[in-house]
Length: 127
Length: 250
Image 1 (cartoon, one colour):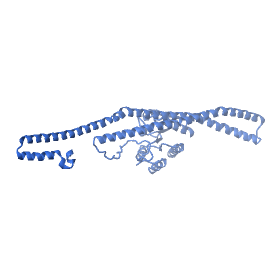
Image 2: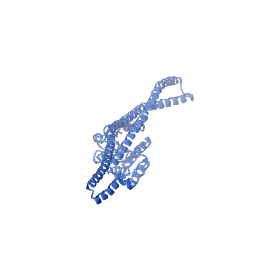
Image 3: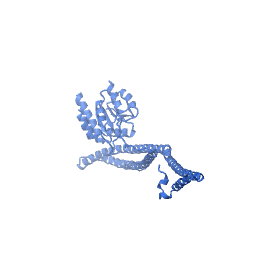
Image 4: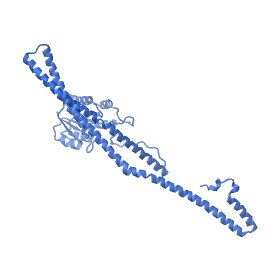
């Protein structure tokens, strides 16, 4: 299970990486914005995407839309981890096809729980 | 603008009144020479008052210009203090980033040690219990002793590493004090700019209109929510995100 972590702050990427390690996901890659992430995702091999919203270059919401628009990545589960807490933004992300939404600051438990739920639901729809 | 003489009392002492009365008398008498003198004196009086008034206006203008020059503080703020504040704030960003990196390094180096500690001590504990239950043969016991010694020596070298890392985490927290001091100075600067701008507006005689509520730009991101700030339309935490998403069918 290969996960791509996208955030412009290396600190946040490391925090997420550490929590993922804790719950048994060690195969992770990092990108610092949507522009860098997109070609990596299109290159294939990723099973999960965790992305921030507010980033220079390409924002998380646009990355999400680009992922959904591309046949190769359309089904990739995407979790937004962001400081943006406006209801309209959460609705926007939901409409764009996000699989989970976490507001910063978050606890490791929240991250574990949301990742678990996303896979549970995916398992239910696929199985 | 009222002339000063209207304020002079009693009216009887007004030199113009005395002269005017005399002028009427002399006119009646037909004393043309004196009449001319009186008119000259009256004109002089009027001129000197005009000069006084002009002098006062000049002084006021001078003071206003001086006050405006004091406001060169604003120019200074814009050309020196604000770029300086930007530098300081950038330093806060790099300082907090360094502190976070230092802390993360220490944590990432310590956690595997803790993991190994849990694993090795757990396994030794199991074997020790086996020994206590007298379920252990002599060769197995010798092996346990050997592993026990190895474990103790490993602890001896690993605990100081964890301790050094914890001390590093402790020291990294020093950023809070330093960044707090820098940010406080920038707040003082912002207050200074505010005060100077208000003074400038006052000097130009404009009234400060009450601030209008900022208009939300569509698509503009708000960033982290600040407690006590206008949080209209924002969720207050993960629970609200979850209930909003579940209301959307998630």
